[in-house]
Amino acid sequence: MNDAEMRRLAIGLMHTMTRIAEALANLNAAQTIVTEALLKLSAGERLDPAALRTHQEHMQAAQFAIRGLAKELEASIDLLEAGPHG
Image 1 (cartoon, rainbow, N blue to C red):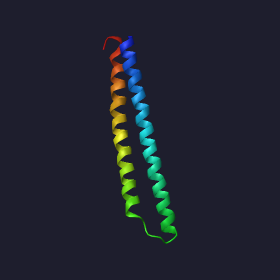
Image 2 (cartoon, rainbow, N blue to C red):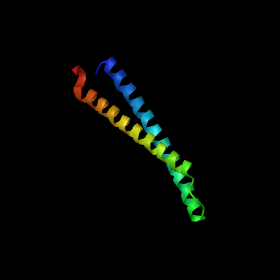
Image 3 (cartoon, one colour):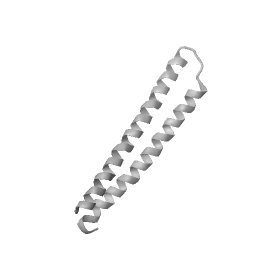
């Protein structure tokens, strides 16, 4: 593998790590919102519709990051499978 291919692979892996961090952050935020909602429900309180919308937005952002992650991993795998002269 030449230097240019190594750079492309390294950049792809950095993007992959960024996507993983984005997905995890959004999943964590969504989990926090759900936990708070469950606590409110168990205390007999009503759910905040804005919190539910925010939860949905975090879940959608996580799904978007995961789809991007899958594409970037495919590109890295293709680069590795192509070998030194791909």
